[in-house]
Length: 95
Image (tube, rainbow, N blue to C red; front, top):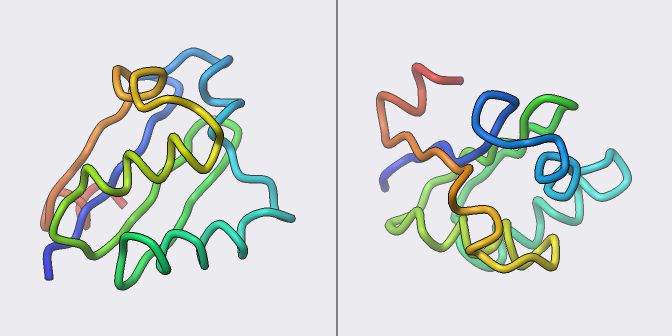
């Protein structure tokens, strides 16, 4: 199963977008359950003031981008210009 890292950070997204996709501690566990229930067999979420990243095993990284946008009640077009995706070794290297 392919591994991906998908996210945005202070280099790729303005503060207004980063604030809208951040996961507070009170939402993190439910978000992880939702992510693994919908589009990833295994996943981890990293969310700080400067970045939000999702690490996941899945065949299609687009599903995680769709999930991230919809989970935060955004359209994919609102966040996709700011997202980066790293596959396999690049994902591991990035983390």
